Image (cartoon, rainbow, N blue to C red):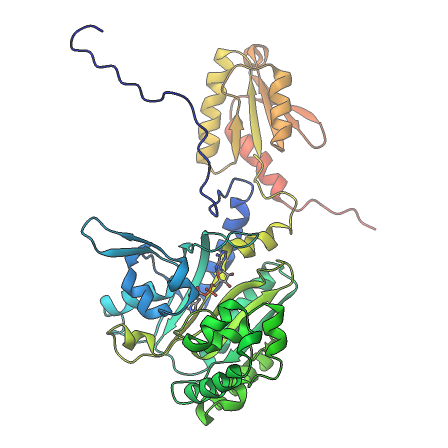
Length: 443
Ligand code: HAM
C-alpha cells in the first residue's frame, strides 16, 4: 500500500438486515389509508376543541412506573428501559397519557385555564409477544381532557370515538363501558373480590395466581378459559359503587342513550393500567381476531396530583392506529393515489421540455409523473398503465416539430392532439374536468 494511504474495509460481505421482531414498516399503499384516518380524526377532534400536543418518545422510567402502576404487565415486563449514559433510567413510552400529564404539569398548562383538550398521534413501544394486531412498536391516536369533572365529557369522548369509526365506515364495533369506582368504593369491592378469589386459587392460571394478591381486579379480564369459568359468580363492581360513582355512571349511560350510541355495560372491563377511576371503556370489534380492542380509555382523576400537579379531573382515550388501519384498509381495494398525468417523452429535447411541464404541473398541485430515463414508448405506456395514470401526454421529435403533443385518456383510449403553446393550462383544465361530475343521461 502506498505510504500515507489507509485502506478502510467497510463490509467484508453483504448481509441482509431485517426488521426487529414486532416492528413493522408501513409502506406506500398503506400510508394513504393511515393519512385518511389521521385527517378524519384531526378534523373531528378539532371540531370538538382538541388541540395537538407533540411529546417526546423517551421519558424517565419513573414517570411510567408511577402512573401506569408498578404491578401492571406493562411496567413489570413490557417496557423498553435503558440506562442513559449518565446512569439514569429512561424508557421508550409505552403509552402517551403519562407524558401528556407530565407536560400539563411541567408547563403549568392549567394556569390560564384548567380545562384543556389535547390530541397526539405517534408511536408507542411495548415488548409484548408479537401477533396479528399486536406489535412492539405500534401507533396510537390519543385524546385527553383535563379539568372537567362532569361525566358529560366521558360521554363526549365515547360519542366522538363512535362517530369517528362511523365516518371511517367501520362496522362491527361496540363500546364496552364500566365504572371502576373511586378511592372511596373501590377498596370495598377489592376486598370482596379478594375474598372470592381466595376460594378459587387452585383453579386460576399462573398469571392470575400472581395477580390475585397484587392486582386482583386484573383477574377479572383474564382470557384463559379456566379463569373465565372459575369467575362465573364473581362479585361485580357495579354492585359496590358509592352513590356518587353510581350517578356519574348513570349519567354517562343516559347521555350515550340520548345520542343514539349503542354500548354494553361490561363489569369485567378493568383495563391494564392502574390510574383509572370511574368510567372506563373499550371499543371492541369482531374484525380483529384475538386483539379485539380497537381503542381504550377512561377517567384518571388522581393522576395529575399524584405526579405533582394540582388536584385535577382528567379523562381520555387512545385508539390503536395499526388495528384501526387494518380494518379501514379493507374498505378499498386500492389506497395508493394514481397520477393524474404521466409524461412520456421520446428523445433528449422532448424529455427536457416534458421535464419543464412536469415541474410546472407539480407546482400547480397536479399529481404528475414522468419517465426520466430513455425507455421505449411501449415501456412508458406500460408503466403509466401500471400506475393507473388517468392521462398520458406523448411527445417526441415529430410532435415538437409540429408544435403539438398527444394526450391519451388511458380509460377510454381516446387520443387528442393539443398545441404545445399554453399546454400547462390546457392539461390542468383536462385534469379538473375529470373531477367534475359527468352529465347523467336523461331517462
Ligand atoms: P391501552 O388500552 O393500553 O390504553 O391502549 C389503547 C389501544 O392501543 C388498545 O385498545 C389497542 O388498540 C392499542 N394497542 C395497545 N397495545 C398494542 C400493541 N402491542 N399493538 C397494537 N396495538 C396496541 C392506553 O394506552 C391508555 N393510555 C389509553 C388512555 C388514554 N386512557 C386514558 N387516556
